[in-house]
Image (cartoon, rainbow, N blue to C red; front, top):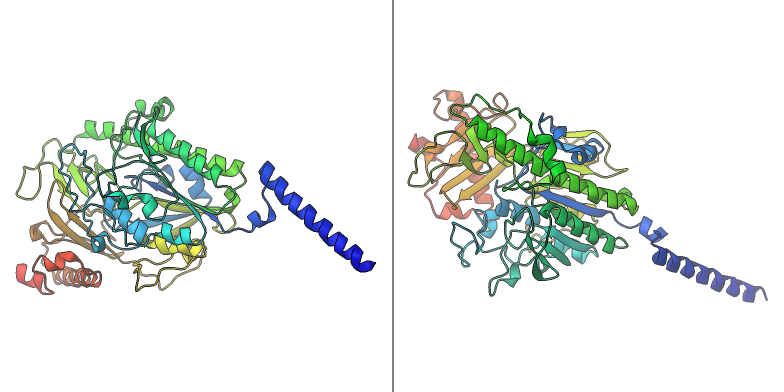
Amino acid sequence: MKEEIYITNSLTYSFLFFLLLLLCNVFGIKSLAQDNKKPDILFVLTDDQAPWAFSASGDPNAITPNMDKLAKNGAVFRNAFTTTPVCSPSRVSIMTGCYASEYGIYDFIVSPTHSSLTYDSTYNAGLDPESVTFAEVLQKAGYKTGLVGKWHLGDWTTEGDKKYHPTNHGFDYFMGLVGGGVSTVDPELEVEGELRKIEGLTTDILADYAIKFIKDNSADNFLLCLNTRAPHARWLPVSESDWAPFENMDPILPNPGYPDLDIEKTKRLTREYLASTRGMDRNLGRVIDVLEELGLLKNTIIIFFSDNGYSMGHNGIEHKGNGKWITKTKPDHTENIKKGYRPNLYDNSLKVPAFVYWEGVVKPGTVIDNTVSVLDLYPTIVEIAGAELPDPKQHIIRGRSFLPLIKGTKMDNWNNDFYSEYSMINYATAFLRSYRTPEWKLVRDFMDPSRDELYHIALDPEENINLINYSSDEIKGVVDSLHQKILEQMEKINDPLLNEINVDREYYKKSR
């Protein structure tokens, strides 16, 4: 009799538990199983956003309340860098944890519809399908993976190039830009595998679809990569509310005394650029609000980076690694440099805004001065997801997880040196490689050693004084030391440039 009662009660409890789960699903109530799930991951990657282009950085012009709120309640990186300061190569490093030169992508990938550059499907066409992205790792670990926005790692609209589509690189879902750019209003975007012209502001539309992905996958573990179009040029039009604070602003310029600087143009572009940034920030707020409304914010880690930095009058230029002079007169065209261009590896091109919000894990107000790079995103995201990194024989990871840093662990052995590369081939030819320590920074142009640069970063963080031609023993020693480190890094990653030019460890001694 007791056994019959026990069995009956067990069946009753099982039925009630099943009924409870059913009701939770029907009415959208989070179950106990959901409360114990792995963290959801929202990775926000903005386009061409400078480290100074959010107000929490101390910039007097920027207005970014949603970024500021996340940064204030999370961990902010003061020394976050990209490996190559243009779109496509940076995104290679983000997605693969490797340098872009390891995949033969040196400059931004040219779209077949580019107005002035020739598209060549046999060269620089897209990310190798044999690569292993962090999205693929999380997909295999059970995450629902989505990408909304800009991919720019291959154009898949031409015949035979479908392999470059994001869904062939670990994403279950994609909606967004086919190439590297699109209009800021009424854009043509891919939705459900088809190109559609959608009415409205592009920044708003991308946020709409990001919100849709979150709602559709709220019951599962998800990775959403929200790759914004803003604040990539062109910046206008923006909404009236985003433009209003800047319409009559007289922005404070970072380097107004730069010789021959076009101050009027610089101020105008600053207003437009920051209005575009504000539009991105407003939509970031919309996405966060939805996470909160759905009860997901407590279990969502938000990682915020930009693909590269940006200059706006800094060092006399605008733009990024493929910088353009913003002076009233421009240097003439040379054999390798198109008139008006200034290839560079300035910190303003390499540094990016970066912060992490994770309620209950990251202590609010955390400021991290350690050097991190976009290479570190891959191992960090994989560790957060509790997944396993690929076998090094299959896929090498150049970065390191910064999870201990955001958790507040003191890392005395953290290496704060940083290596960067940029083989500019669009608009100019410059083979730039750089090694940076917290004290010094050497930039080598293997195409033309007369364009080499050395900056004493600790005393000259704005990189105003190029010391490369100073003949003191200290300067010679620094140049030689950093030059050897550049070559060591090039050899470590098997830089293709080593096979194209005559580089040896005595190069400086022979050429100076």
